[in-house]
Image 1 (cartoon, rainbow, N blue to C red):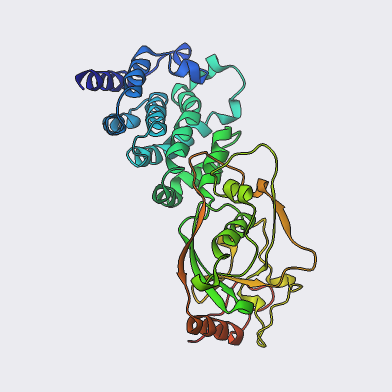
Image 2: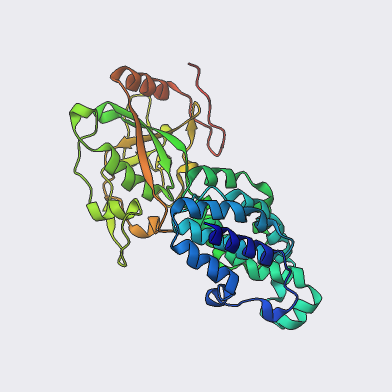
Length: 366
């Protein structure tokens, strides 16, 4: 489509022109796309195929790195819209993550003065103010892409310059919170789940799991089922709660779930094989993250025990949606055989417990 290629090049040429006046910086999202070249490209992309939109995003990627940080943010936001329309979310995300550390550092230099005289601030520090004004748009594009790709989220978590810059940012826009929450999810985390009472065990993989209450709801959905399939006995969970936990359903009201089991870390299994609901020291606390579950011999272990005397319950606020494109799940990787379950339980029973107040978990001998 020659027309689409021409419109894309027109946006690239525009992005390379630095903004030299405060009035040239749009304030609202509507104003953001009033620029005729951006609007024309979006109108053409709206009629194009998903593969054509991906081609446009690919062509726009170099323009995210233009010297003017606001213009770069504009291009990033444009790529984010194309992703929402079906373009590949992995095409532009790395360019955005590469640009963000510099942008946050520049924006932080004027953050304490935001809300004052913008005209004076623009005259004194134009590049820093443009970085600040463009930051919400750059972050929105990042969240749009990260929500759709676990691998990109995992890569973003390794971006130490970005993490350090965000930590030092004062008066941060709300988009920083959404970005940080996306990166705080447990992704690609494997758990070993053991139920001593039913002599069953599982390996599961987490994707986009927020809190341990979120984990509990997803586990109760994934692990309860037919005994012939090696799953656990129990009542199937509330379908609407599970749909909200998977981010497949949005509801205005709070929904509630209750614990089928009590959840313990590995230290809850005593040498005699008992697992008591009142052993608060080994409880896995719902408000915390699956990333906080202690390791045993390199594995994060969840033990399923008898329900607590006062049944634990939680509401769907603990897994409120961060972005509609996120899909949260517990994937069942393996149902362990009886021998493997017995072996794990025996090793845990025989292992020394960490000293009180110690953060070091002993690694038992095999």
